[in-house]
Image (cartoon, rainbow, N blue to C red; front, side, top):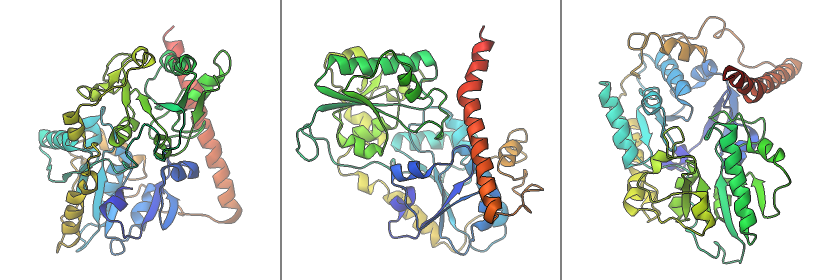
Length: 419
């Protein structure tokens, strides 16, 4: 989406870095990701595959560690080159944790996109705070906002039930008790309002992963709940935009879905039931006018967002959104047409972070200088026939074992440690 926001008439080749957060085909379809070509690839192979003369722009839409590794790998691969692609990245979503860590892992890109004026100020402050260049930060907006403005009778005017959507998050809150509580309150809201439809919007199906690990999926909590869900309450997947088309009240702890909802003018509640705490991320919405509890929502409360807060967050649907990416387009165009781009120079180097950087790069098959590690450079990028089938089978088995460890074994070990 970011690539198309920067320029719509492009050829887009997609590379999915192989790892824990590699999206499935279903997840890609759900968010509407489209590319002219798409392939799953190792980090070392991506660095080798990105021909500096073939591409004008490389968008690194990965988690922070992967971005940093690819920056070092590309810096090494393009060292001394007269021309190279413009490298763009960003820190997308509700940035409420790991602000410094996530941003410094992205430093070195030519353009670091900030989601709003609020984020642009914070991003520059972090870079200046460590003595790093902050000129790469460009204010834009969240790339996935859009959709029709909210109407109480639905976008098409067709009568439908008043719909409440609880947008679940994979890692917030963390404990079983808190997640069970939130599910129970959504179910109780459905029972108290039989004329309403209550949807629990899930990010992934069991076994799938997103950027954040989900140890306690709501699907499993719902399966263990006493009795079936009421007829007007159900779990749903699918594109968030399509769900928002029929939403009258968005409820969440701190999901980016709240910003999507606010952008459309949909009444949005950020829950205070578990407190307003940094670990939950709902402190990000201080001053928004959206903080509310399930008790208040049960009683009919509809939060009214603060206009100034919305403007600073870049989510107000007032016609400005389509121009929000003008600065990014201008910056990328200027860099593309420059006679020569400077070398990629991340803040983290073997000198500034000797105890941190090598581990990040090694996870992607690179040494501390961005060179492929022994054993990675010479390994074949792809294999054919039965070997490929066997390798995919082993990979799926390994992913299954990893998911089992994350979702079952690790929580059990933590519980034993608390005894």
